[in-house]
Image (cartoon, rainbow, N blue to C red):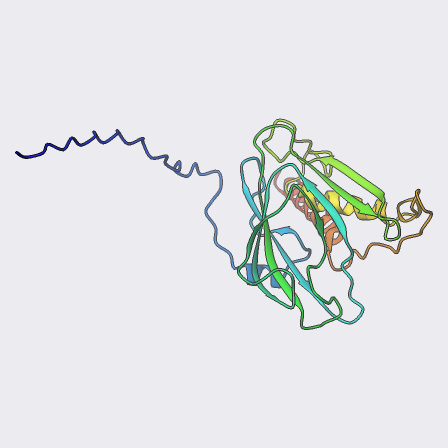
Length: 245
């Protein structure tokens, strides 16, 4: 007698989710992180020109050591997730080729084992996806070196262009052709407050903290360059209208 084996019916396969076709809003681009960051004006600079709602924004960073070099330390909070990809490092806590999902609130420093070592370096990207809904925000916090209590906290709305809560005048002007990237503009405000007399002096223990070393980060320079570029754009438009009304 032959046994009869019943085979269970194969369940119907669910339709595969498909990535939508390009809508033309963002032209596909390709850059080399090494070439782009070799000429960058600041750390955490977006390497593509897209940072509106829904955009995936890789921000480049280059850290390196040297005599007397100091990157300081602070804490960063972001309501959207961040992913760190290391594209090369030496004598650093971030290994070459590593990929790390960051906590929503995390400490930030150079990640070099010895900031005085001229051979130590890190080249990496920190990538976030801009929210399409209201509520994206960031925070930066400094703590006292002596007692570890909080001495400065700055929180700000970071809704990107196209989001329902985007505020063009928070860091720039309504008619800006190239708006300020909120992470860099907010970080620049943080440094200004942190380096004030009030921001350096701990209300808990009275310790006067050293100024935060903005130089290696370059945030204010990029904010200033963006402001000047917008002014230059409008100036040329005005002159063109005078010549050809």
